[in-house]
Length: 367
Image: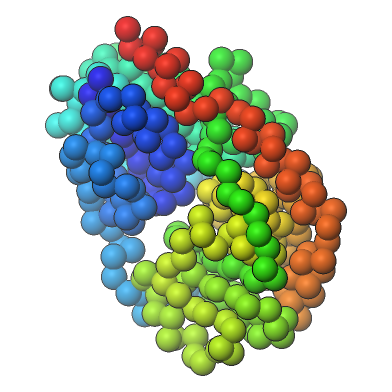
């Protein structure tokens, strides 16, 4: 098959798809990738015969960090219809249009409504990969009007089907918000390989790719906390922030543009992050407890998952002082119960369908 792989967002929209992309390539299918530059940076280029990449604002160093804003959950849910089924969908539709005439299959993330719509219009089967662990952002029953508008603009005869022809979820059902159940025919796929957990007392911290430039003074508070704790630490600030802006740090605290989490997380005793679905899952695979400081998007829902399953600690990004963050790190590093609970969920995650099994199911759909 000739497969078009599309991602409408940043790294968090592409990374959950990569195990399926790899399995499709291993099965002999020919892949093309369409997406943003900041997401494609995480893509193994050898997987794709062709890459159609759109530059975005994450390519340049950002001189400012905007003030931190209070999370408005209702507004985050509304953005799915107003933005992802609006301007973002139209940009994605235009980006993949030239790829579809020779495509046998589209694989896209669950917010990539423009790609779904164009493939549906062209009669190309659609595999939708969930990128929101909680399942709480994409609520089809509330998107009818947005989908109707999008269908009309793109000249479709039917509404967008947000679950496509096959819905793949690379998260364990326990990680999903019980209020937002997945379809009965969902393919629950293992999200990655096992990471051998070998904690060495270190701390890994990141605020992701999308919200770090809207995090106010949260990075300085995290760095102050790490200075108090005294553990070795690595802090990823992204390629669009200059690490030097945060000033001198203790020699045991490294501020870096990028961290290879597959290497760093298994060695960590604690990971501190924004609550994105990808980091949530990578941390579980590494067997490491988490401190979550949710700032927006799916992060508040994932923070609830961390608390509900006992995987770590959730802190208010506004109220958490450096002392509060330091105390949370020290407490979690010593919490053997949290590490056991993470390990138990890790075993469940690794018991999900292999990506190759999901590919075999997808191939039956194509036939």
